[in-house]
Structure formats: C-alpha cells, structure tokens
Length: 178
Image (tube, rainbow, N blue to C red; front, side):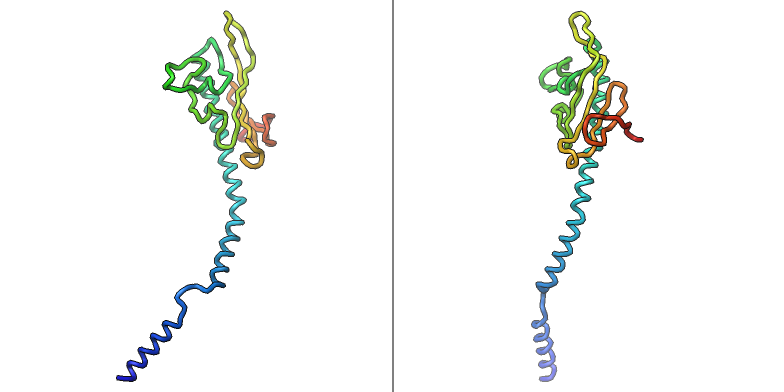
C-alpha cells in the first residue's frame, strides 16, 4: 500500500512541476506572427476601402443623375438643378419646391460622401419670362484625397453616361466600363 501511495505522490509532484501556460518565447513568436500578418493585410484593407469609395461615388453619380431627370420633369420651367441642395431639402420644412425638391437624401446634398466631393454645374442657360432655365448640367465626384480616399474622378451629364478621370480629377475622358 505504501508503494501505491508513493506512486500517486510522485505523479502529483511531476504534474505540479509541469508548466500550465506558455513560455515567454512562445508568446513572442505568436505576437511576431500576428504582426507580420497585420502588416501584410493593411495595404489590402486600404485598397478595399478606396474601391468601396469609388463604387459608392459611381452609385451616387447615378443617383444624382436620376434626381436631375426627376427635377427637370417636375420643374420644367427651371430645367435642371444647379446645386445639390436644390435637389435635397428637409421634408419637415414644408412642400417641395424648386429650391428644395426633396429628391436627394441629406448625405448627398452636403456634397461629401464616402471620401468623395460632389458638385453640380449648370450649362446652356436660357431666360424665358424672367426665369432662368438650364438645359444641361454636369455632375462631378472627385476624391477628397487622391490616392487615399480614391484614385479616379467621375463625371456625368444629362446624357447619363458616366466617365472617369484616372488621375482623380474632373477631366473625365474615359467611359466607365471600357
């Protein structure tokens, strides 16, 4: 019986001498591997963010173009809207008007969305009965910081074709999708 006790006793002693955790060297190796993986992933995350911003900008240019068509059909005397706030407006402020048509959501009417700056310029002004009517427009979306928030600028007009500037500006010469 003594023998059995001593065998159990040495087993417990061996167990208490075994380490119950990781050594410092093992932890440092794991941390180094995690850091290496993070350093490899950071550039990928940045390019994914730029790509998401560009996709959002393209969609926003399409939404603004559709809003312009709706504005022009709702307010034919005015033609196209020359500002983003004219396409927007607060629904709580009263009925829609040519100064606030309540067609666009507030995130676009501010002119800033997903790392891009949006602007509308009007062209071909005709004055009829003391009212200015704009027969064409151009919408542009340029990155807030070229290379960081986006690489390309995007443009569209009343024709509806979206073009882009590979340098990130508003000199859109290449048709999207080519």
